[in-house]
Length: 300
Length: 139
Image (cartoon, rainbow over all chains, first blue to last red):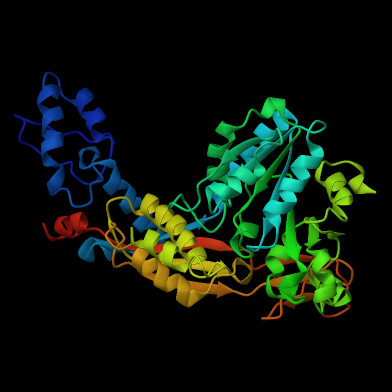
């Protein structure tokens, strides 16, 4: 700042010691020479070994600033540097999940993320639920676990709006639904005309539990054919849910299922879970589940 | 395309198998690419909590083919595992969770516990190599 340089022509430079912004001074210091100097500064920047000049582009200036911060100057010789980041890989998903939730809230819709292992009877329970609620509760379904068109047909005919997500064709993360997928699926639903949305997640006890999609709460379907130890084997899933449907109760006479052991295992990972013993096939016990599903007398 | 094939052939692995790691590697790769821009990435460091249910070997394998043919091809993946831990609301004890992932307090048996670590999935650092800067340094 404030250096005085006398220049006879535009070829000059004694002031090149890394002072960003020096060109402003020159305009004041030299009568009638300022035009030449403006051009000169641009042309000379490469010879200024410590000059963070503007015409080298923002990327390099940024790199150097980072290298300064990190204290690693080896980058100048080798081009290598280490960048500290600390970015939560789930953060972007969670932001979108919040946006989805705001859309649900704005429309006054209750949204349940329904998860399970494959073959637990999730679609059957959903089918029975839709049939029971038809005419009283306006239901939308985001269907993320379609193996065949046959599954989709099973859910049709009950007056529910159904938005299909094709998770089998490399559609994002195929082992679970994530918030961006749900955002897309919302285009297939008219939320203003709905009371309840059920998101049928991909049949999988691992990752669906880890991805918020904007639901208000999570539930899962578990079949007694799966074995009593599942809560301990998949604690993250069992801990993530508010409600557990214990399905296929109609098969109990043919199995050695130990319900008490199962409850103990659930309590070890999720002591506050609501458990609904039911049979989606026969309809036994489904009424209590429906009350919880629709947000009715569940919180007693 | 490779990932899609793996998906198709492993769909029978109903536990999630490696598919989970593939999906996470894609998210990780996107974050790394945002941070690195055009520069070549030599190594990626990530911290993963025990409750993220990631199998490190599966993650490493998934990473190699998720980045194959992309600007991140060849970038090494370094995983730091963070143990899951719970703190008891009743007695205050903190328990590090091992393979047996019950969430009840090991000190007093209470079920009222909070997870205090283990849910991390954080890109912590990248090592980059910028060819443009090598040129500059030599000039």
